[in-house]
Image 1 (cartoon, rainbow, N blue to C red):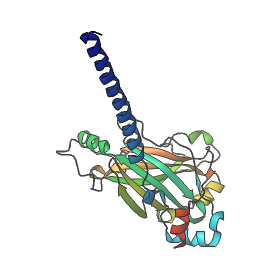
Image 2: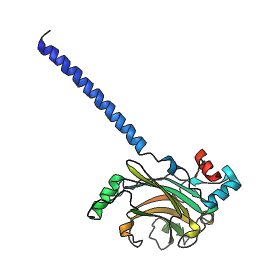
Image 3: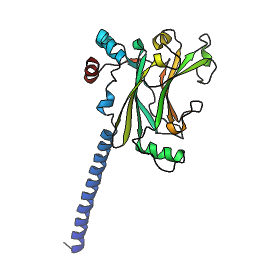
Image 4: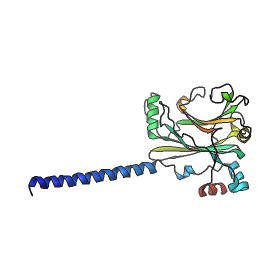
Length: 246
Protein backbone atom coordinates (compact mmCIF):
# COMPACT_ATOMS: atom_id res chain seq x y z
CA UNK A 1 0.00 0.00 0.00
CA UNK A 2 1.46 3.35 -1.04
CA UNK A 3 2.09 6.16 1.37
CA UNK A 4 -0.37 8.32 -0.55
CA UNK A 5 -3.15 5.78 -0.06
CA UNK A 6 -2.36 5.48 3.66
CA UNK A 7 -2.47 9.27 4.02
CA UNK A 8 -5.83 9.39 2.22
CA UNK A 9 -7.30 6.75 4.54
CA UNK A 10 -6.04 8.58 7.60
CA UNK A 11 -7.48 11.85 6.31
CA UNK A 12 -10.81 10.11 5.69
CA UNK A 13 -10.90 8.80 9.27
CA UNK A 14 -10.10 12.26 10.64
CA UNK A 15 -12.74 13.84 8.44
CA UNK A 16 -15.32 11.27 9.53
CA UNK A 17 -14.42 11.85 13.18
CA UNK A 18 -14.77 15.62 12.77
CA UNK A 19 -18.15 15.23 11.06
CA UNK A 20 -19.40 13.00 13.91
CA UNK A 21 -18.18 15.58 16.45
CA UNK A 22 -19.96 18.33 14.51
CA UNK A 23 -23.24 16.39 14.45
CA UNK A 24 -22.98 15.64 18.19
CA UNK A 25 -22.19 19.29 18.94
CA UNK A 26 -25.20 20.47 16.94
CA UNK A 27 -27.48 17.99 18.71
CA UNK A 28 -26.15 19.02 22.14
CA UNK A 29 -26.64 22.69 21.23
CA UNK A 30 -30.21 22.08 20.07
CA UNK A 31 -31.08 20.17 23.25
CA UNK A 32 -29.51 22.94 25.35
CA UNK A 33 -31.54 25.57 23.48
CA UNK A 34 -34.74 23.64 24.10
CA UNK A 35 -34.12 23.30 27.82
CA UNK A 36 -32.70 26.81 28.20
CA UNK A 37 -35.77 28.23 26.46
CA UNK A 38 -38.27 26.32 28.58
CA UNK A 39 -40.46 28.09 31.10
CA UNK A 40 -38.97 27.87 34.63
CA UNK A 41 -41.02 25.76 37.02
CA UNK A 42 -41.54 28.77 39.30
CA UNK A 43 -43.22 30.61 36.42
CA UNK A 44 -45.30 27.62 35.35
CA UNK A 45 -47.09 27.62 38.70
CA UNK A 46 -50.14 29.82 39.12
CA UNK A 47 -49.80 32.89 41.31
CA UNK A 48 -51.85 32.11 44.44
CA UNK A 49 -53.96 35.28 44.63
CA UNK A 50 -56.33 35.58 47.59
CA UNK A 51 -59.45 35.17 45.44
CA UNK A 52 -57.98 32.20 43.61
CA UNK A 53 -57.01 30.44 46.85
CA UNK A 54 -60.47 31.03 48.28
CA UNK A 55 -62.19 29.78 45.14
CA UNK A 56 -59.98 26.68 45.03
CA UNK A 57 -60.67 25.94 48.71
CA UNK A 58 -64.39 26.01 47.92
CA UNK A 59 -64.48 24.24 44.55
CA UNK A 60 -61.24 22.30 44.25
CA UNK A 61 -60.81 20.73 40.83
CA UNK A 62 -64.31 21.90 39.87
CA UNK A 63 -63.02 25.47 39.56
CA UNK A 64 -63.32 26.40 35.89
CA UNK A 65 -60.13 27.71 34.31
CA UNK A 66 -59.79 27.88 30.53
CA UNK A 67 -57.38 28.82 27.76
CA UNK A 68 -57.53 29.16 23.98
CA UNK A 69 -55.16 28.25 21.18
CA UNK A 70 -53.57 31.35 19.66
CA UNK A 71 -50.41 32.53 17.90
CA UNK A 72 -48.20 33.14 20.92
CA UNK A 73 -45.27 35.07 19.34
CA UNK A 74 -45.25 38.56 17.81
CA UNK A 75 -44.75 38.30 14.06
CA UNK A 76 -45.00 41.84 12.68
CA UNK A 77 -42.05 42.94 10.55
CA UNK A 78 -40.87 45.41 13.20
CA UNK A 79 -41.12 43.03 16.19
CA UNK A 80 -40.92 39.49 14.82
CA UNK A 81 -39.97 37.14 17.61
CA UNK A 82 -39.55 39.94 20.17
CA UNK A 83 -42.29 38.87 22.60
CA UNK A 84 -44.20 35.72 23.47
CA UNK A 85 -47.06 34.70 25.74
CA UNK A 86 -46.72 30.91 25.98
CA UNK A 87 -49.57 30.69 28.51
CA UNK A 88 -52.76 32.66 29.14
CA UNK A 89 -55.52 31.36 31.38
CA UNK A 90 -58.85 32.93 32.32
CA UNK A 91 -60.75 32.31 35.56
CA UNK A 92 -64.22 33.82 34.98
CA UNK A 93 -65.66 32.94 38.38
CA UNK A 94 -63.21 35.21 40.21
CA UNK A 95 -62.84 37.74 37.35
CA UNK A 96 -59.13 37.10 36.92
CA UNK A 97 -56.60 36.06 34.30
CA UNK A 98 -52.94 35.02 34.41
CA UNK A 99 -50.37 35.08 31.62
CA UNK A 100 -46.73 34.14 31.14
CA UNK A 101 -44.76 36.81 29.27
CA UNK A 102 -41.38 36.04 27.70
CA UNK A 103 -38.70 37.89 25.78
CA UNK A 104 -35.13 36.93 24.95
CA UNK A 105 -31.79 38.71 25.19
CA UNK A 106 -31.84 39.67 21.51
CA UNK A 107 -35.12 41.51 22.11
CA UNK A 108 -33.29 43.89 24.46
CA UNK A 109 -30.50 44.43 21.91
CA UNK A 110 -33.01 45.05 19.11
CA UNK A 111 -35.00 47.42 21.32
CA UNK A 112 -31.85 49.48 21.93
CA UNK A 113 -31.48 49.83 18.15
CA UNK A 114 -35.18 50.57 17.59
CA UNK A 115 -35.12 53.40 20.14
CA UNK A 116 -31.57 54.58 19.31
CA UNK A 117 -30.48 54.11 22.91
CA UNK A 118 -26.86 55.00 23.75
CA UNK A 119 -26.29 51.53 25.19
CA UNK A 120 -28.08 48.22 25.61
CA UNK A 121 -30.04 48.24 28.90
CA UNK A 122 -29.34 45.64 31.54
CA UNK A 123 -31.64 42.66 31.23
CA UNK A 124 -32.23 43.00 34.98
CA UNK A 125 -34.09 46.28 34.45
CA UNK A 126 -37.88 46.49 34.36
CA UNK A 127 -38.04 47.20 30.63
CA UNK A 128 -41.59 46.49 29.50
CA UNK A 129 -45.11 47.42 30.50
CA UNK A 130 -47.60 44.57 30.05
CA UNK A 131 -51.37 45.02 30.18
CA UNK A 132 -54.53 43.29 29.00
CA UNK A 133 -57.03 45.12 26.84
CA UNK A 134 -60.64 43.93 26.69
CA UNK A 135 -62.77 44.68 23.64
CA UNK A 136 -66.47 44.80 24.53
CA UNK A 137 -69.31 44.86 22.02
CA UNK A 138 -71.39 48.03 22.23
CA UNK A 139 -73.60 47.05 19.29
CA UNK A 140 -74.55 43.38 19.79
CA UNK A 141 -77.18 43.65 17.05
CA UNK A 142 -74.47 44.45 14.53
CA UNK A 143 -71.77 41.72 14.41
CA UNK A 144 -70.13 43.30 11.35
CA UNK A 145 -68.26 45.87 13.43
CA UNK A 146 -66.54 43.34 15.69
CA UNK A 147 -63.55 42.56 13.48
CA UNK A 148 -61.85 45.96 13.65
CA UNK A 149 -60.48 46.72 17.13
CA UNK A 150 -60.65 50.43 16.25
CA UNK A 151 -64.36 50.21 15.48
CA UNK A 152 -66.67 52.60 17.35
CA UNK A 153 -68.82 49.54 18.03
CA UNK A 154 -66.20 48.20 20.46
CA UNK A 155 -65.34 49.56 23.88
CA UNK A 156 -61.70 49.25 24.95
CA UNK A 157 -60.88 48.70 28.64
CA UNK A 158 -57.31 48.28 29.88
CA UNK A 159 -56.29 46.24 32.93
CA UNK A 160 -52.85 46.43 34.57
CA UNK A 161 -51.24 43.54 36.48
CA UNK A 162 -52.19 43.07 40.11
CA UNK A 163 -49.37 40.60 40.81
CA UNK A 164 -46.19 39.39 39.15
CA UNK A 165 -43.24 37.03 39.44
CA UNK A 166 -40.02 37.14 37.42
CA UNK A 167 -37.37 34.55 36.61
CA UNK A 168 -34.44 34.85 34.20
CA UNK A 169 -32.61 32.08 32.37
CA UNK A 170 -29.50 32.18 30.22
CA UNK A 171 -31.49 33.18 27.15
CA UNK A 172 -34.81 34.58 28.33
CA UNK A 173 -36.65 36.73 30.84
CA UNK A 174 -39.96 35.28 32.07
CA UNK A 175 -42.79 37.00 33.92
CA UNK A 176 -46.01 35.59 35.27
CA UNK A 177 -48.68 38.25 35.72
CA UNK A 178 -52.07 38.06 37.39
CA UNK A 179 -54.85 40.45 36.37
CA UNK A 180 -57.85 41.35 38.54
CA UNK A 181 -60.54 42.78 36.27
CA UNK A 182 -62.23 44.34 39.29
CA UNK A 183 -59.28 46.74 39.24
CA UNK A 184 -59.41 47.57 35.52
CA UNK A 185 -59.69 51.21 34.48
CA UNK A 186 -63.42 50.50 34.40
CA UNK A 187 -64.67 47.56 36.46
CA UNK A 188 -65.87 44.68 34.32
CA UNK A 189 -67.18 41.17 34.92
CA UNK A 190 -65.74 38.84 32.28
CA UNK A 191 -68.07 35.98 33.22
CA UNK A 192 -71.13 38.15 32.66
CA UNK A 193 -69.67 39.59 29.48
CA UNK A 194 -68.95 36.10 28.14
CA UNK A 195 -72.40 34.83 29.11
CA UNK A 196 -73.96 37.79 27.31
CA UNK A 197 -71.72 37.35 24.27
CA UNK A 198 -70.27 40.84 24.66
CA UNK A 199 -66.59 40.03 25.27
CA UNK A 200 -65.18 40.03 21.76
CA UNK A 201 -61.44 39.81 22.40
CA UNK A 202 -58.67 40.17 24.97
CA UNK A 203 -55.27 41.37 23.79
CA UNK A 204 -51.97 41.50 25.65
CA UNK A 205 -50.13 44.73 24.83
CA UNK A 206 -46.44 45.43 25.41
CA UNK A 207 -44.80 48.86 25.67
CA UNK A 208 -41.22 49.88 26.30
CA UNK A 209 -41.26 51.64 29.67
CA UNK A 210 -39.08 54.39 28.25
CA UNK A 211 -41.82 55.22 25.73
CA UNK A 212 -44.99 54.38 27.64
CA UNK A 213 -47.97 56.05 26.01
CA UNK A 214 -51.22 54.10 25.72
CA UNK A 215 -52.40 56.52 23.03
CA UNK A 216 -49.69 55.14 20.76
CA UNK A 217 -49.72 51.76 19.08
CA UNK A 218 -48.07 49.14 21.33
CA UNK A 219 -44.56 47.87 20.71
CA UNK A 220 -46.12 44.42 20.47
CA UNK A 221 -49.53 42.79 20.94
CA UNK A 222 -51.04 39.31 20.95
CA UNK A 223 -54.66 38.19 20.75
CA UNK A 224 -55.14 35.82 23.70
CA UNK A 225 -58.92 35.45 23.58
CA UNK A 226 -61.42 35.72 20.75
CA UNK A 227 -65.11 35.02 21.18
CA UNK A 228 -65.33 32.69 18.18
CA UNK A 229 -62.46 30.44 19.30
CA UNK A 230 -62.94 27.37 21.44
CA UNK A 231 -62.25 27.41 25.18
CA UNK A 232 -60.22 24.51 26.61
CA UNK A 233 -60.47 23.67 30.29
CA UNK A 234 -57.15 23.76 32.13
CA UNK A 235 -56.29 21.05 34.65
CA UNK A 236 -54.28 22.23 37.63
CA UNK A 237 -50.85 20.69 38.12
CA UNK A 238 -49.72 19.26 41.44
CA UNK A 239 -47.59 22.38 41.98
CA UNK A 240 -50.61 24.60 41.28
CA UNK A 241 -52.69 22.70 43.82
CA UNK A 242 -49.94 22.89 46.41
CA UNK A 243 -49.52 26.64 45.90
CA UNK A 244 -53.26 27.23 46.19
CA UNK A 245 -53.63 25.02 49.26
CA UNK A 246 -50.85 26.65 51.31
